Amino acid sequence: MSSQPQDTPLLCRRCGAQVMPGSGNHYRITIEAVADPVPPNLSKEDLTQDFESQIKQLLARMQELSEQEAMDQVFRRVTLYLCNGCYRSWIEDPTG
Image 1: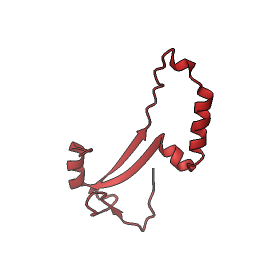
Image 2 (image 1 turned 135 degrees about the horizontal axis):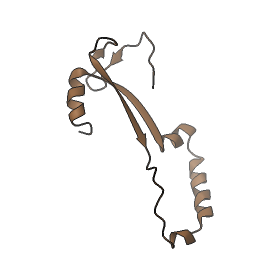
Image 3 (image 1 turned 180 degrees about the horizontal axis):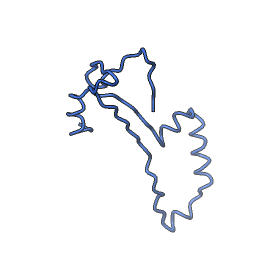
Image 4 (image 1 turned 120 degrees about the vertical axis):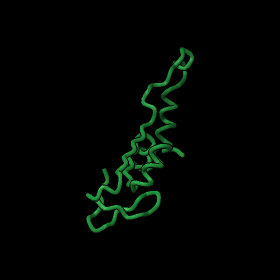
């Protein structure tokens, strides 16, 4: 969970209204995104492929990424704050 310095005001991520810890005027939302954890379905034909060269190619592409960029492709956690009004509309349609 990300923490904010005490002197930094918390703002609603949608409307920018200041929210006050302990006042009951906001929600803390934590979102976790995880890449598909299920192994791929492999056919007998898939098993005849040259996996070693594919792994080498993947590793070469990954060398251009920072550690954080590589991790973000697998797991990401975001914490945000919403005022009560914004939360009520967001919770009904979080992707809208």
